[in-house]
Length: 406
Image (cartoon, rainbow, N blue to C red; front, side):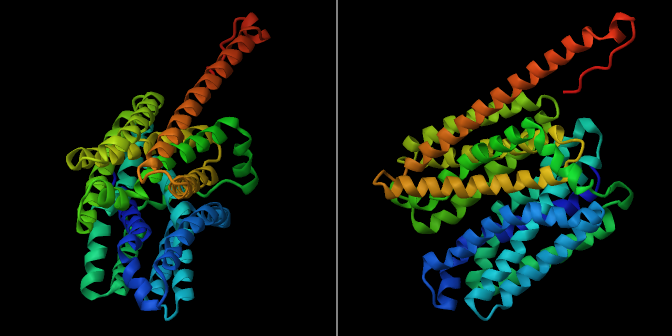
């Protein structure tokens, strides 16, 4: 694989760390600014909303630049956002820094996906995507625990200084390793928007919202389930999060390999497996060993959905994929926010702490249904195309008819 993918993975590692590290830093941040834990939680909520808004916005603004130039600008903005978070004298400025950082998230993964896919042969694109996204998964295994430890030893601001340094490293890697001649400029904005007229693009994004969103219905309340249901000590949450992250790494890498061979079957398997594991977690959460295994499997099947979900959008929006790719990253985060909200509703409604697992399972099952529907509609469209082609004058005259592109 090209070394340029390493630069993209480093950037993804930094972005993944800044997204999830707040979970372990909230108490210190709340104490420093003199606010409550729920109020400090806006550092996570506003980040997610910033990703949803920033992904299409930054992509549209970046249509005047080549993809490499846009990646450089995004990593520079990422550094600025994390430095602002680190030095912020007030709670409001800290939140502003989080929003600035979040605006780079969706566009980086969206444009980075296109660059990664362009760096390799077509039959290796899913593997390249999974390698770039491995930076995000490794962030949950290494970056988040390291950030929490750094905060405990030197203060939470030090964690964000370290994340900013990761951004500088990623920026330098993009400058040196991403080849400019392969980093094409985005299409005109009108052409980018036109791909959303394709129903398959919308169905692919709906799969993303429902499919990966199911993961966050469960993991948002993972700490509560593990401590209050399974009976783990609060200190165990750090390594349990790492177990989840290890599952994510494995699922992402294996899925990337098999997605290149059979994208839709891989999507079916990962979504079905995730739905079943989430149902099982409702019961295994009451037993420590079984809970540990299930947490790893949620990470495995959850991130096994990512390469096929992202590749599906890239394939369906091949004519002008930049905005659609970034929009799909926004869809991931919208699904996360929706699932976490729905999970909170069922708990607030008086159901048990394991009830969000049912929410996640239902969302994932719905995503599987959408995937089957999309595949059916695609096959029917191809069949209609062949019928029309067979009845055309060109065929009657014995001329060759181009194959319908799937």
